[in-house]
Image 1 (cartoon, rainbow, N blue to C red):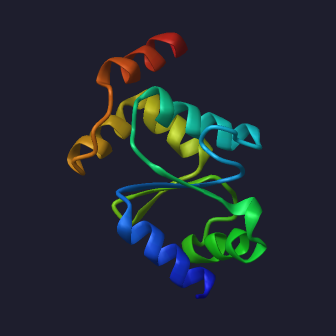
Image 2: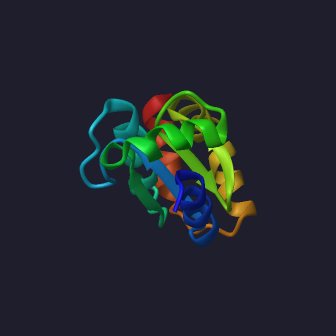
Image 3: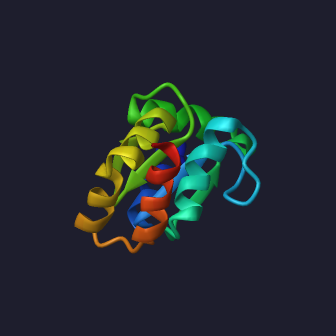
Length: 119
């Protein structure tokens, strides 16, 4: 299976996928930690893919999305963005809207707390 096939299979069978360095319980870079922390705090059910375990996948996800950095978040098979974009979307409420529109369960109170803490 090629990296592209693996990526397509992963984003096709999981509503929310985070390609990251490390795992959702043990991120191995600050940017991955930030996005995983937001998703974990908001109670989003997501698949985590550790790109450090496979160099082909690590480069493959960058080629697939045409986005040069990790982490990368996908919702319902669509690339959403990396750390800066997810942070901005969280603070603006856009992430809440995206999740709601796609039928993804999350803790709205937790999302509000993130925004309050950043105000």
